[in-house]
Length: 294
Length: 156
Image (cartoon, each protein chain N blue to C red):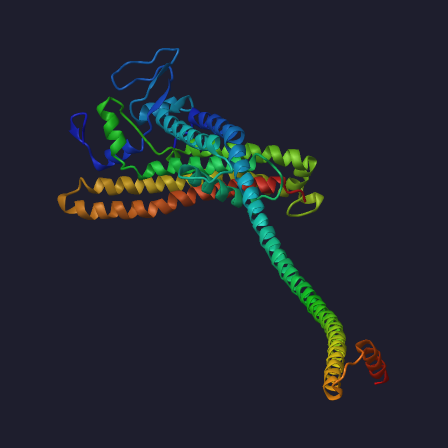
């Protein structure tokens, strides 16, 4: 674990694991590690270290998060599309059976929670469930395997669990939030404004209070949705990294650390499924609320 | 926690995947499943119908059997009656035939007897004649005697 010639400390190890591979625009006048000063036009480049990432601000992309997230999404689409092509009324087998099981599970969950008629909800729930599950599943891959492997081919940072990136979880939560707003307005029209301003105190005097409370409540939904997934996965990943860091402490720690790693991984199988399920169910519930006309 | 363009990228990817799933994944799978469900329901209904049909057929078979038995009994009854009638008829015919045969036999016997009587009579007369001839020892006019005998037999 030697980096840049000196022995890597535990804290460096952890920070390294929590840093995204970032491609972004360095602002003009920024002094890089090697002394180069960025020109007036700015510089689109791959960031080296947290300082550069911080300097890039919003004009940056987490390449690893995007690649893994989109890649897993493509795997989901490809897998389910293969089955969709094969699906027929005949006896299903193998993969078709498995996919149909997932589809039926999602379909039942949607039917239990969402009582309106909207052809978007069920596919949306399926996409969220499987995609989030796959992204969470990356957490079970040993923490050092991919980053250290990619280091060998010169890629400095790699965070392979997209759902430990708030951009990813919030991106999806915002997508859900936009749908909530769209359907609220589409279904309730002006009633949506009434709902925001006349609840919970139905009196004209209380409209500002109501409006404030309801808007905060509304905005809290996407935040809680996105940050819940991020927080759980980030914490889980952090614990994996901490356990992995134990290996470098001493020989006597190898066995306990291995046991802890296995134990946490087994427990995490439950967590990643549960988090994917919660994200899906909350999406359905929020959209169901958006469709309910009082 | 760096919020950056990744957020937008993920939002776009999210929309794209949901759209793909909604268009190309969900409908075929769900419709195939619904179709299969329908097929199974149809199959079960058909099985139900078949078992019901079987029950009906069994009932009908039992009824047919009972009918056939009843019919057979009627036929046997009629046949018995017919047989009895035939036997009666035969008996009557046989009795009549027997009577006829008896009558014919009786007539023949009578005829025979008459003939035997006649023969006997003629033999007796010739015997008597011969006897008388012997007794008388004289010639006797046969023709006269025959006439005499005839009147004698006629007297008897």
